[in-house]
Length: 349
Image: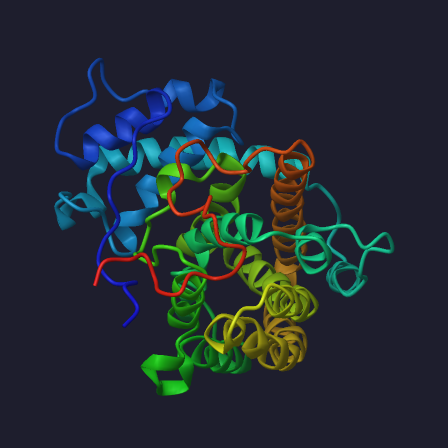
């Protein structure tokens, strides 16, 4: 049985913003008042702001252990989150600037890098089990809630765009079968690789570059004004998924993993190849036919998603080339002596 249910533990703070969010979630007003001014002066891509945003969004998902459900709509939390969102969004718009040619942005997603550089390439050719476990720990912050952030956009769409996006989500959520929910398949993969598959287990050890791609999904999804950017984000995930999933399946096979590990990726190779066309033609096509003014937002959502994924890849590859971990210190279950998957999962039964 896969242990992916329940709520996450509150992580340690990494600065004044995440400390303030932590205090609010625990029902204690931040000493000295809300640090909203800090949001404008803090690195928008740094550990403190990105962890604070992740913590502020989590009550909209499964919440944290020991945190009252009513904190989801705490006014201080929303004020501070709003200030951090504005800082993050401004930085994204500056770093991922460009025009409104959605077709060009989508076409660019289909171009595989000529040099074959990337985390999935590294794992397919030379990766170790230690590096594979690091990869899975990073990805667990999104994959254990896969397609949940994108569900926020459903009520903001209509017509064919809504119908087709829901069809894609239906596949992501297992086509009506709980055992096939993609988040569940990823949890099976984690356990097969000797990792703890409990929801949010590796949040404490995730660097800012891992949190930012998840945060941008929540940011786009929770703001109706950014519905175009959310559709662009979802299209990016679906279009870029099949080649990377194919490489990851090969990496796991090379490392001797079983079907319980490879299934998550083999499922994405076929399903997302279909989703690519649905997202491009039926979702984006219909959305822009109805609301052509959203083209710039869709294109921005694509560029922002690519930017944050590139930052994550650069971080991970740089760490591995320097012979160090790409996670924050202390991540459990990563450094195992066996050069193959664990014989049994490490999550408690």
